[in-house]
Amino acid sequence: MARVCCLAAVSVEDVQVLGAALEGVGEPATTIVTHLEVGALKRIAPDVLVADLDRCQADPLEKLRQLRFVLPNCVIVVYTANMQPSWGRDCHLAGASCLLSKESHQLQLQSGLRQAMKSGCFTDVHFSVATLKGAV
Image (cartoon, rainbow, N blue to C red; front, side):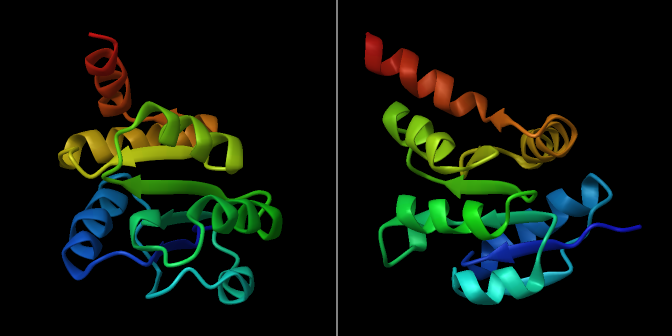
């Protein structure tokens, strides 16, 4: 049985990039929504949700906690340009299964998605690099 994959609140350009990454791991995006509306996403009940929290108008971490509450078995992927080490940690603590950097290329996105869907957890290497840069 195919999984339901959803892209939420991503730009038009990112829909193409992320859609191709999902297709690359054999999971085409089946639903695209323009906003992170918790009720609508609960009705869709995706198995994999890729969301751009950078575009979230409300408190993004609270939105993430709400999504985790209504989608307890979903692989929630945060797609972000925010490379602050605390942001990555806070997203995982709020319920993200996976963090992907907007700096990643196609193969890195595919690898991260594949790992997250397999193990339930993944953090893009760009967050580790950002942490190392901050320690210098």
